[in-house]
Length: 196
Ligand code: GAR
View 1 (tube, rainbow, N blue to C red):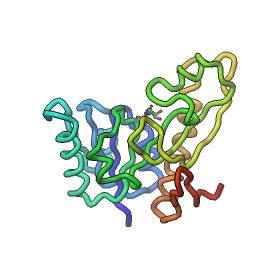
View 2 (cartoon, rainbow, N blue to C red):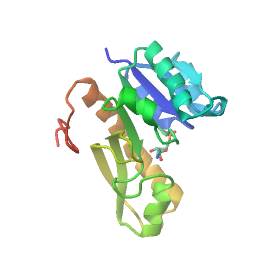
View 3 (tube, protein in one colour):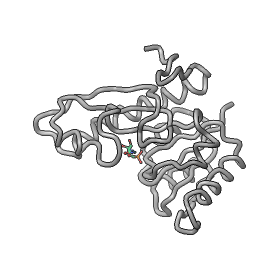
View 4 (cartoon, protein in one colour):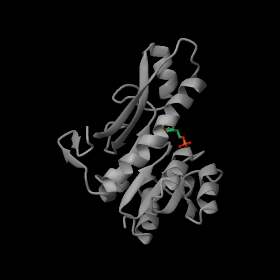
């Protein structure tokens, strides 16, 4: 069975969706001590670890600590779920091709922070959620699954975010299952095996 490690920074509703899908999550790591996702993990008897980046001299040593914890749990897939840092060389060296992220926009539109606000400000009529492999860029890796949602006239950042989040909670577990079943193949930038 594939051991999954989840890295978060906050609320952890996507983590909850992965837990609820019955996936084998063996450890949850947060860069923030007060991330609610850590409580969710503990409630489900999953190891919950806070790693404080400020305690390390640089990003590499911080990420080496993350890798140490992931290796201790023999993690074969890393899921970023609301982890608000750009992944550096050390995590990529160890987990590229085995690390996924969920993003609240139809990439390559609106990468980075506040994607829902960016979508509203730009005036797009459709936005959505994307699950992708993590590479060295910011939200640039090969796309696995996407779902679109409409942007409505009276939307605020909150209402659009909620509509997108509902879809995130569906496609993240789906993508993880496809990975766990060995169905996904990356050919250049295209991911096949998603049934699309
Ligand atoms: C989610 O909407 C996720 O897509 C987004 O943060 C939220 C975390 O919510 N991630 C990013 O914006 C990453 N660039 P959650 O903690 O409840 O899963």
